[in-house]
Amino acid sequence: MSRLKNNRLYKKLPIKYRLIITLAVMLVTVLFFIIILLFLLVASSYIQENEFLERFLSSDNGQEEQEQKPVSGAYIVSGIAPEVTRYEEYFRKYAKENGIEEHTEIIMAMTMQESGGRYSDVMQSSESLGLPVNTLNDPEKSIEQGVKYFSQTLDEAGGDVELALQAYNMGSGFINYVDEHNDGEYSKEMAKQFSDEMAGKMGWSRYGDINYVDNVMRYLEKDESVLAAKDGEWALPLDEIRTTSEFGMRTHPVTGETESFHGGLDFACTPEDDIMAVKDGEVVEAIHSNVGYGNYVTVQHSENEFSRYAHMTSLSVSVGDSVSQGDSLGKCGTTGSSTGNHLHLEHMTELGQAHPNKTDPRETLGL
Image (cartoon, rainbow, N blue to C red; front, top):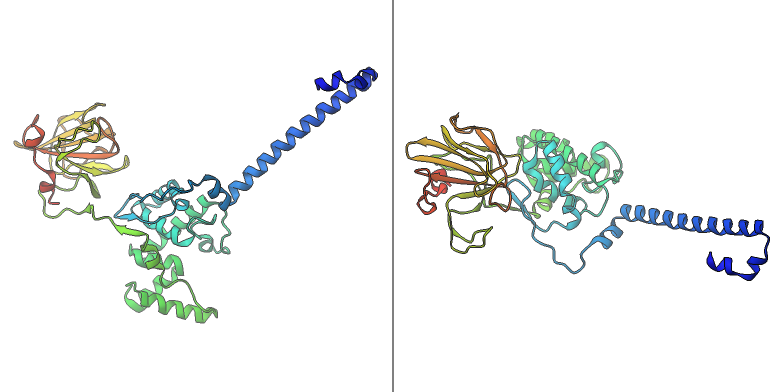
């Protein structure tokens, strides 16, 4: 604009023409910036809709894929691609809504088999709505419907995971077929028979994937740290037990001290999990703190038997309360000296007991 005003020819023009030229230049400049802005908006929208470009632009090229940790339940996912794990919050959300949180890893493995996360209909769930393949173009909607449908097949299958998985692939008619021909017991032979019969009826070369269960399960490993109580004196403090730190000497996870005695047993849990009394007794401590044990409860079961539950988010009991085995004492958390959500459980014979003199809860729980 300054160059234009200093131009000799421009200066010789009448004022009204100079004003028109100035306005025209300003208008062209504004239009130019509007066009650039629109281009950026369209490009951004296109990238978001294009799975390949989005992965290419956001991927960490050259980085090794890290081994996944358990999300919930008794499996560890293995070999799940980042294109699938990026939707983990949706898997968690809809698994919880449908009451099948313990099967979150299985759902992720199903998604890996269905699409590898490469399509918008990541769980290939359009067909369960009676729609053509890949009709759903929103990954969250696909997961919402896919998890809902798997929950339904799991219910129809009476909780039999393998039967429910094959039904997810072949339709709920497979469950009825197995009920009629094999007393409700899943087998690959049943899947093959059903596939052959359906393919013949439809006039197709094949129907479904008879290896679907195997193909899904290859992405899962049994989590051997998920243990069940045997004949212990105490009941389990959580619905599901997965040990994360043993009783005895260890390197302290917060201070880094290498010769630190861990006076309890740690179990993985989430803030939604209830921490339950391992035995009948009376609450003798219900402490709210942001250091050490954090929020914790101590229950006295007999003259020389105490259980302590540490790092809870919230407490649901007070000192003097009588509790029965299995009663909720509060919610799992990570208060105090803690690096993540977990339950720290102790077995003491007296209050104020030194850590090395405490009893390993594993023995009392019968694990």
